[in-house]
Length: 429
Image (cartoon, rainbow, N blue to C red; front, side):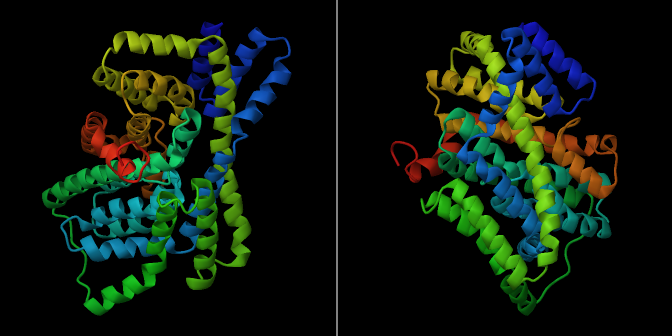
């Protein structure tokens, strides 16, 4: 039966069937073989897969990101970043990296993050004679990498399917996100010197103070959300609602760049993005049931443990598996299917569940900008009007750097565990 299910899945993927539909067809094929009442069982498993209060954070963070992108918050974050690094060679590239980090801290969606920041920075990079393929690769890598910065939708999903504290994952994502950002900025500085990229025009202290004053409300957004979550003031789900309310107030009444008449369009866009994510989650839930019924996860876990008698080998195997999967399929179903298998196996080898969740999330960031299915790469290419094949070569240095940081995050657990331990999510805090 397992062979039939996998055959249906890969046949659908090769036929370019949307990933959610492909997973649903494979799940339906398995359920038809398992039980005669499959048409009753399938809807039950689909609904149960998304019937979790914690998942409410996903549509709310997507809505918050959509509001902020349309309400001028993203542009002000870019202007703030430009104050600090604009005078460095290749500093506009630094701005892209820092802006995606800050904006990811309020919207939670890598694709929304890339689109919002890219819409502001891509025209400016091209105006300043940044090579279009390099600018596209930089935006794709930055938007993807920022997805490890809380509040990340991927971290929420990892926490839900694995039973790991979402607050602990959010705390753990901060230092690895900073490591990725520093590595990307170092690469950007190298290419800034090599390509003789321009620096930003000088600004007076009066202008800097004006930009800071204009952007202070945008800068407070991640402080309120992350500070509230990590300080125990509210849960990640409650934080998503706070993000929506704060974004609406600031966009409608403070910056006045979003009008009440535009809200239906904003809600529709957020609903469309939410539907894409939740449909994959729902279908993957049914698919996971089929796999669990056939005890396939147990077989995979047993195989991994049999080959990985030490956590170092386990980490290497997991990294290779997610890197290969990320090149051919969306990361979401892989997280839902594999995380419940991998976390117990890693814990058995002496690893902390939070560490497992973060280095898997770091793998997901790479899959978001690697062809052929990297969603952030699609968004960046759409903004620059370049075909994907024109960006593959400039992407390779970014891929090499982020693979190096992935190995660092994977094999130096304290990078991940330091902040959660300090905040009491782990023993010894």
